[in-house]
Amino acid sequence: MKRILLLGLLVIQTASANELSMMTAEGFGFSDATRFSEAQARLMALRAAKIDAQRNLLEVINGVRVTAGTTVKDMTLESDIIGTRVKGMLQGAFETASDVTLQDGNWVASVTMAVCMDKTALECRAKPTLAAITQPSLVVTPEEDRFGVADLPPAAVAVVQTEVAVPVAAMVEDTADVEVTNADSTAIATVASEGNVALQNSRVTGLILDASALNYTPMLDVRVRTQRGKELYGPGHVPMGSDWLHWAPSLESAQNMEEIIGESPIVIVPEALGEATELVVNDADAIALFTSNTLNQDFLASGKVIIVVSGS
Image (cartoon, rainbow, N blue to C red; front, top):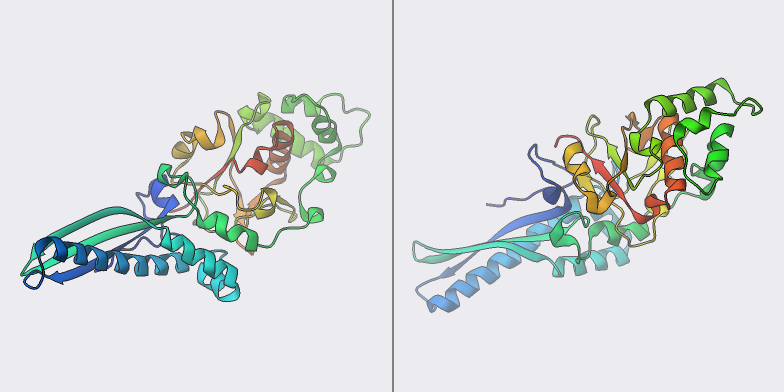
């Protein structure tokens, strides 16, 4: 009689942003109506249902994917700190629904409990999240393996070194005296001609990663990398324990979440999944993202990122 949302293992077709953000589990409890007063019997049934829901909820949490090959359970087995924090989070689970009815001489109660994967849902804004709890235990990518100014085409370097944001099209101007490879020119021209309107308008407030065409579901260790393996976003790009993961069931839903990514997000479609299930973007999009982030107060460091997942 369990009805469990296995977030990270299953994303249902009609999932909402709240359902992606919250993990829920239902529990059931019973008490004999003939042995106790009505008030006492109802409370006993509800208490039993709550305990059952918490037990079921732990199963859900343990099944959440950290990477393609690991789960929260794996992390808790390896780290007493994570295990303690997960148990503490479970104790702080909140009730989303309850019901108690008299059936064949027994009071039968059902209780639905929830904990938060991230802070996307309104109910989760002031609550601890699994994403924040597990982030400090994730491997941080070294600076030399992150995308930086040294990875930009020469024409783009001058842009990110200015103090005032300029349209991407400016990257292809006045480059006669700069040595630019064919690959560099192609990347810059692609961004200038096909790039994001928000970036061309010089103001970007966040990032939407539309991974809906990929076999990608919510997980706790998210990495965005280039084709050459340089990391653009991951757990080490934001302060530890911060609100850095957000999920949406559609591009339209993500665009409506202005409280997270603002009014002018840059939208990037990852072209593939890497061997470690990282989201891989092409060179042109990497240039666009790094440049817009540098020129717009480092919105990545503030976790202003929403990922649109597949199967939703």
